[in-house]
Image (cartoon, rainbow, N blue to C red):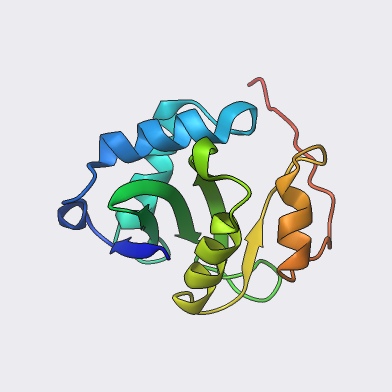
Amino acid sequence: MLNYKLCNNENDFNLTSINETVEFLHKHLEQFGDNPTDIRKCIDYALQKDCGKGGFVLQAYYNAQLAGVLVMNNTGMSGYIPENILVYIAVDSKHRGKGFGAEIIKEAVKRTKGNIKLHVEYDNPAKRLYERLGFTTKYAEMRFENKK
């Protein structure tokens, strides 16, 4: 059974600091993650209350130890782009295979208003989990890196 801590602002990080949360995500996202600076930017965005920004950080604890983290950002849009983007979901490697990832996502969905999108690499094993939870593939994401 997981216990959850919803973080909507910096003061909510009283069990595990923002920096510890960043380190957790960086470690447990492994090759599918980003650098700590970008993870921190994502968390900072989730905690903002400016118009069109926001979201939340959901920490999951198992036996009083941090076992998983999810970061949801609001997009400030709807319709053609879903209202929310699930940016990061990571489970401590020692707890994988116990269904924690699915539990954390289901808890986040309950706490989210509007539709949710996420990006997943084709070779990420978590892709099957997302599909089982009802996420579908609508588009292939393509990026152009502007060198200007």
